[in-house]
Image (tube, rainbow, N blue to C red; front, side, top):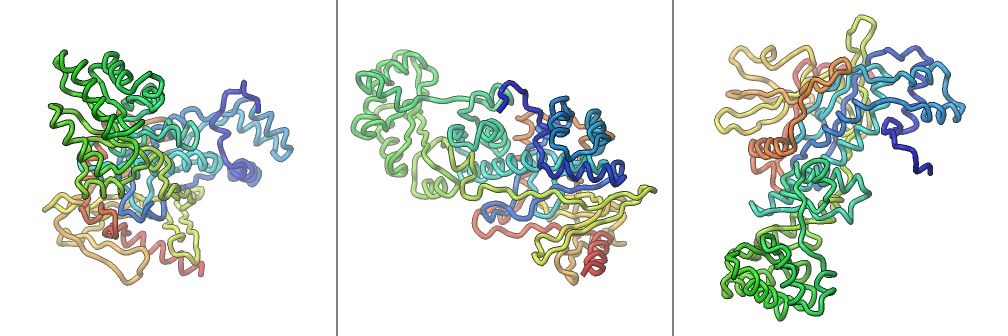
Length: 486
């Protein structure tokens, strides 16, 4: 490997994107405008919702799309590519349009998270990076949100860097976890790059390095009196760990008038140990001492611990968050849904399969979220052809009839509702037109949007099915293509 070469992310693509690009070029399709949707087919962990994330990294990638001379030399060396195509790549720049839902938006299967309208070669070359970025960060943001919800208002910190799948998994994973609701991370570089608050306490090595556990605790309190959180399970949690911590607090912090401190547990029966620890700390006069636990936690373990009466103030969640260990693949796909003829008319395209979930919804589309006016809760999402909208589809009485995309006979009429279009323009004619929000704004927006979902949709077991339905016009387009291509 040439370690001196700076990585050009444009080359982070499946090789077939380049061979197809070369084929489009030679077939005269270089300038054919195509439409691709990025969507997913099922929610991880059999959940009721997912959280969209990764758009900021997509924007940065699009803005830097280019081929270096050494990239062209490499491709020429493969002896597969037309010289005209290589010349085209030398001056490559994204010139198309991208529409996407904002990061932090709850999203559901079969609806476009991101839509690309661009010349065929440009649209095809985006596939790998868009998928790996949206898939990864949406997966981690979704898992983090589930864990945060299980904690019921208690602080959740992302502690998984050392167990992540590579440096990118750790760095961008911490960002996604923050979007999902985590308050901070152990990953320093994620704080430096993105502003995800980084923090930490100590390892067992700190305690083992000193002549005694008490000396280790006392020294740490002296060095960090305003942030003294002591790891108490290196030896024996109840017999020496907590007593030595209390002694250090009494001798170092109390004379300084400091009452806020903490202990951390990384092993053992967390329900029993935290209950006993809470009693010991309270009896010693440290009611404000917080208890943090870590060690292979997830939403189900946290939920069970709290049901068992565990006395926990915050959770440090590592490998099962940063790897989404219970289901580590998001499953987003990038599919052609149409192209434009020489007059700019969209020719819808469909992909068929014996697996119904793999049948795509054709056409250049809009995505609306419908809200119940009485409760302000989301009723469902509604897809329509790009040249129509909700108002033009309303019945004379102001109601809206929506069609189930998987059942030709099933439809529903809703009343007393308002709508919001989910996708926003990100790039138009290759130019960025979207103002990227700050990370704290994305996290806050995510929580606000989660509050619009019914609790039945958010439950961990057997969540209510959230509906993603079609306009009559879009349903007819899909049905016609299904019929024609039997």
